[in-house]
Length: 245
Ligand SMILES: [Zn+2]
Image (cartoon, rainbow, N blue to C red; front, side, top):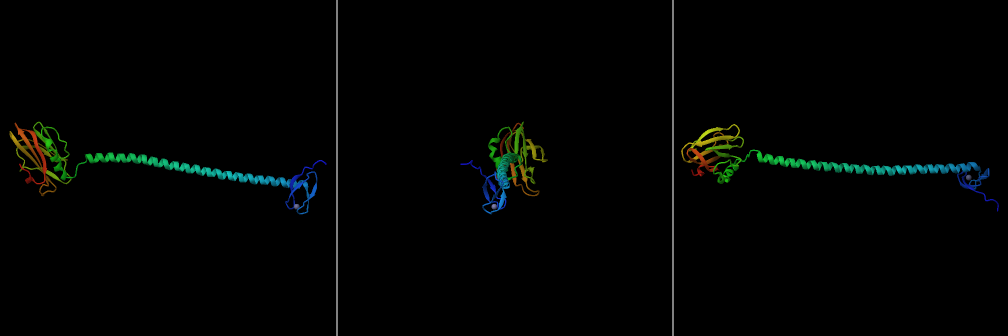
């Protein structure tokens, strides 16, 4: 056998048919189209095609990678977006909670310290505390507040807006009103007007000028040696005739 001829791939320069040819030869004839071609050109043709193919491949590869990357980027963006949303809601709930707590605290404080506009409950208040009213010391009533100090009775009333009150001269007995003012709350100080016995201070509450009182606050006190020594009863009544003096 003679030395084996090493054939190389080539493409026909005329029809592009795939060939394997002897590179040592100068010319050959294409078995597909029958045209004669220059071997070197056909080999170059093949190599160029391979290059083109790999170029196309690498372009496709690049595009694929770009696609992959943009997919990754989109995933990342979505993740970041979710994270942002989550942190927004976290913040929202955190501050929402703080606001709610603040609201509750402020609300509680307001409800606790604002004047009570419910005039109807004043009478009940005073009645419920009457048992504890004997002796000296300030009573924990919202309205009226009263205090016995050195033989003098101090009374303070916060009234519903629009209403007012007056010392009832007809029913107040054995007690002398030393001072009163209704600048903000109604306040008065009362001392004994007799040496000993029972005394009464009656305060009338009005809604409107000219109306009958809608409530009476009655303080029944014990007087000794020209001093008020005990609050026997502090009571609110709707009708003065219901009270047994
Ligand atoms: Zn050909």
